Length: 198
Ligand SMILES: [Zn+2]
Image (cartoon, rainbow, N blue to C red; front, side):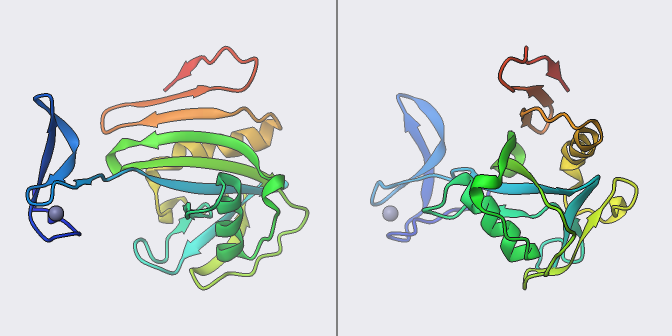
């Protein structure tokens, strides 16, 4: 593990030990300040036009040139839906009010230290205006979408589920927990029994 340094005083950091237990955050060996690598919150939005979903082609590294569902990191002062609406607008030019976004999926991806919250929305036209972070945007059916050039194949399962839900017209709310070794996903919609699915 590479040495980490205190952003306040420059001394080295060590794992914080509380009551003899080594915790998953750091403490400065000089000033004693605590430092956490809290998970980042990623907000995304599945935008459907008929049976097609909106994809954006990344203009920035990592994965430049690869395709993804529009989304990005939540910023301070934003609600989850506001962040998702902002990322959508910035990347694709699709401007929807946050109030029009429906909660769709939540999850943890422990091996990249992220929490994600996905929303869904529907639009009447395939109008897009790629922003500076996008090379291109487009609405693709399941058959049309560039599966061989997706930016994050780890989450292909949830994208396939979104196409399934579009086909059936029935949308549940899903919660997924992904670790290096496990993938658990279950429905959490009100009134649903929450059957495990993994
Ligand atoms: Zn320090």
